[in-house]
Every structure is written in C-alpha cells, then in structure tokens.
Length: 252
Image (cartoon, rainbow, N blue to C red):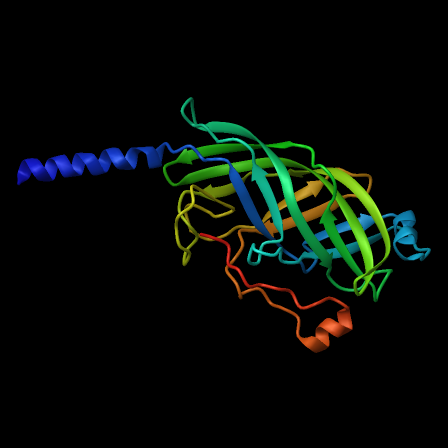
C-alpha cells in the first residue's frame, strides 16, 4: 500500500507540473467596459458636425460598453494570435488583434437625443501583448492594441451621420492575471486576465489612446449575467438606448 501511495503521489505531482509551467494557448480575451466617466473620447468640432450637423467646440463624450451577443456582459474581445510560451523563461510576447467592440454613449452629448454607437471597423492592425509569469499563481501583462472604429449617430435604427477613427491603446502600468478563476467563479480556462492572483478579485485596467483627440478605455474581467444593470423601459426611452441584452454567460 505504501508503494502504491507513493506511486500515486508521484503521478499526481507530475500531472501538476505542466500547470505550474503551463503555456497560455492562443484565444480570446473578453472584457467588460466601465462607464461612469471611466471610458471616454474627445471628438473634434468637425466630428460633431459630421455626426449630426451641430457646430460645437471639441467635446468629450462619455462611453460605456454594450454587451456583444454571445459574450454575456462582455463588450470588447481581443484575440491572442499565438501561444504564450514559457519554456524559455517567464516572459512571453504574443501578437494580438481586436476582434470586436461595442460601446454607446453614457449620458448626454452634443448630438443628443441621438444615440452614439461605436463598433470596430475594417481590418484591424495587429498589436502585441507581453505576459510575465511571476509564480505558479499568475503574473502580470501589458498590451498595445491598435483600434479602428466607426462612430455612428443613430435615431433608432437610422444612421444620421458617422465618422471613422483609428489609434493605438497602451497600458501605462502592467495588469494582473491569474491561473485561477476569480473568487466565486468556475474554472476551465488556461488563464484569467485582469484577475489578481493574490486576492482572486478582478482589477480595473485602463488603456489610453494615442490620437490627436485622446481616449481612455477602462475595463474589467466580465461578470456573469445578469449582474450588469440594464435600462428599464422608461429610462431606455429617455436615453434613446435599447435595453442591453445579457443572455449568455461567458464560459469560465
């Protein structure tokens, strides 16, 4: 029995080793964009004129994420195009690319009561992500994400005006990632970006755009549906924004 126990223990230890030195396979990272002033962009006077024909000075517009179909509360998806290989050390750099993005205005703006919708547009340029593994629980990562978008001013489903923009969003500080899911979540993924490995809690990550008109994008690891607040009928009519769908939880 002692030999069998030792053999079983050795087998379990060997099975655990790949998890400690595990490469992170290519795949999608899904994010939940924060509103309330955390995400915004400055649109120039000419932009507002193109969107709805108003003549105003350069003005900041507050934005918030609007759930993408099939991604739970997620509104931004960035794809890691290659595996993060730690076989040669604890730092790996991989190519990344924006896959999907969907924002709406968060509050009034010069084109109100029209709704501003922001989506990815055209072929996205590749960026890079550097992933550092600190220990067997996780580490930190930073990224540079090129983004090409279209902003549409809509009256219901009718597009009144639109503009296109592009830029590169960079982190100013590294963000945490964990091998383990956030506290209260379930496992099954190779890594959990935006989750602090020491506390198990999601952390806020912000990226800043390098455009003539600066932009800020702050986000977190997405919670499961239906924890994100949706607009009631009266509020939806007042803001001209449809009720935000949240029917499919992000796979954990």
